[in-house]
Image 1 (cartoon, one colour):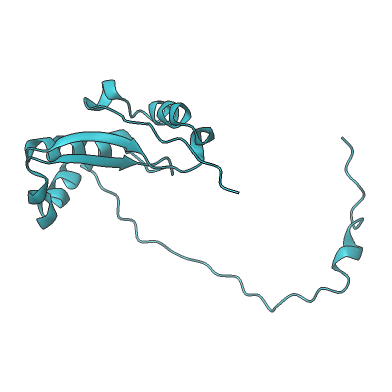
Image 2 (cartoon, rainbow, N blue to C red):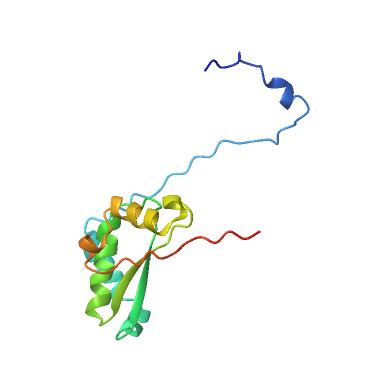
Amino acid sequence: MTLPPLGYYDHFLRDVSLPRMWGVRVDYEDRRVEDVPGTVREELLGCSALKRAAGKRVALAVGSRGLANLPVLVKTTVEVLREQGADVFLVPAMGSHGGATAEGQRLLLEQLGVSEETMGVPVLSEIEPVEIG
């Protein structure tokens, strides 16, 4: 494929005026968590809603948006919920990722290190899209 010469598409922008723009730089504070499982556990145990999980069936939604340490986050959350007496299962929470099919979403979670085998709880991926209109 050959690209058109530089400036070839300039005529599309001839009558477009762009707003004034400024460069912005954001410096984020370095807040590295050294003990991910310990920090997740501590935060969850400090949550008052956790006590309501006891004796209940709890769906833990897991997405695919690139969280660092996703398997550790999910596994620790599952462990804490189970320690509280919850019957935990995982559900994909990713919309159209994985081809928007239940199997594709389950496979995508698996590729991210989250599966029934690695988490020790069922992954219920029964979400099939419905086309409307």
